[in-house]
Amino acid sequence: MAWIVLIFSGVMEAVWATALGRMDGLNKITPLIIFIAGLVLSMLGLGYAMRSIPTGTAYCIWTGIGAAITVIIGIVTKTEPVSVLKIVFLIGLVCCVIGLKVVSKG
Image 1 (cartoon, rainbow, N blue to C red):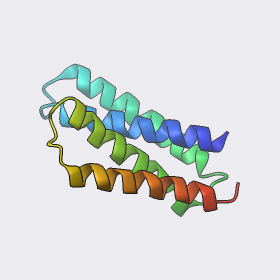
Image 2 (image 1 turned 60 degrees about the vertical axis):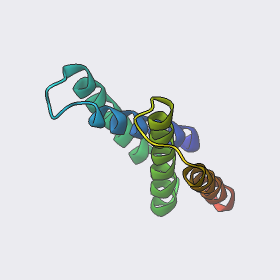
Image 3 (image 1 turned 180 degrees about the vertical axis):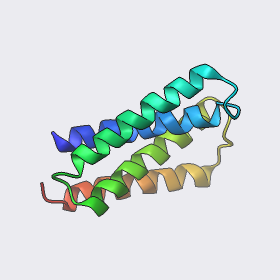
């Protein structure tokens, strides 16, 4: 269950990071609300997952999932430039996250 919560928490990290970039300071209320909700859910999920997954592993996976999804959202919405190298490094990041899961106990 902790791994499912950790994955969800990583997705919520991407949600709050994307919303943060769209808040225009504090001038847009909808992204602000999404940011706060995503941040709370992300942190609660990470905290829950860390009860049974080692802290370093959980944090690395949480960050990797959030970073990869945030970049993908940027590419899909055309707010982030895309390149072959960026895609190669994203694939590498995802492989590293999967590798951490494979070698982790629990």
